[in-house]
Length: 75
Length: 362
Image (cartoon, each protein chain N blue to C red):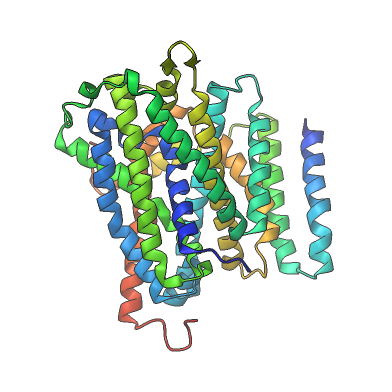
C-alpha cells in the first residue's frame, strides 16, 4: 500500500514539476514541494494506521475551552 | 493570476449552489423541529448583516480580494494572520463537503466501495475545474443548478400524496432560546458566502456584488425552506432524528406502486451541488494561498491542497452524528470571527485610516 502511495505522489511530481522548472517558477516549486511533502507524510501515517486527531473534535475542545476561560457555560 | 471573468448572475448561481451544497442534505436549524423553515427565514435576515459588511468592504476596495485587503488595511504580518484564519475556514468547509459526500455514499448507494476511491474520484473532477479557473466553475454550475432545481421541484411534486400539512403545526414548539440558537446556526451557514470575497475581483461588474449575493441568498433560502417544509410535512416530528432527512423523504415516494424508491434524487442533487461547493472551496483556498505567498500562479498548489483537503476529510470527524453536533453547537461560534468580526473591524479600520488611498484602488 505504501508503494502505491509513493507511486501516486511520484506521478503527481512528474506531471507538475517539469513545467515549473521550465518556467523558472522557483517560489511556486518550493510551495508545491512543501505541500506535497506534508500530504505524503500524512498519507503514509494514515496508511500505517497512525491515529491522527479529528478536526471537529479538536475545534470543539478549543472553542469550549475558550468559552470556559471567558466564564461562559455551555447551554 | 486569474484571467477569467464572471457575470453577477453567474455569481448568484454560484452562491445558491455553495449554500445548498451540503446544507440541503443536513437541513440547517433542524433542532427547531416543525419550525425549521422559520429558522431558515430568520437566519436569512440575520445573515444580511455579515453580507452587507463584507460586500461594503469589497466595494470599497474594488478589484482586491480579501487577502489583498487584509494586507492593505492591517499590514503584512497581522493581515497575513487574518488571511490564514480565513483560508483555514474555507479549507475546512471544503474538507467537510468531501467528508459528507463520503458519508452519504458509504451509507446509501456505494456501501462496498472503499472510502479512498470515492474521495479520489471526487477530488479529480474538483482539481480539473479548479485548475481551469472561475469561469469554467461558473459555467459548469449554470448547467448543474438547472438540473438540481428541476429535480427539487420534481421531488416536491412527487411527495404531495404523502404530505401532511398538520405535521407543520405547532410552528414553534421549542423554547425561544433554542429557536434563536437554531436561527444563529442557519445564519452562520448563509454567512459562508464570505468565500466569494476572493471571487468579487473577477466580476465583470464589480459594483453588483451585493445584489448578486443577496439574490443568491434569497433563492437558496427559498429552496432550503421548501425542502424543510417537505421533509417535516412527510416525516413529521421524526424528521429531526434522521441524518439525511431529504433522503428518507424521497425513499417514501410511491406513485401507484410504479414510481417508488426515488432516493437517488437527493443523492444526485448532492453530487452536483457538493461538487460545486468542494470545487469553489478548493479554488478559493488555492488562489488565496497563492496570493498569501506572493506566487505568480495558483495552479501548482491546486493538486497538493486538494490532497490535503481529502486527508482532512478523512480526519474531519469520527462519525457523521458528531459532525451534525458540531454544525449545530460549535459552527455558529467558530464562524463568527471569519464571517463578522474580522470583516467588521477591517471595514472600520479602513474607514478610520481613509483607505484605500488614491491609486491603491484599481
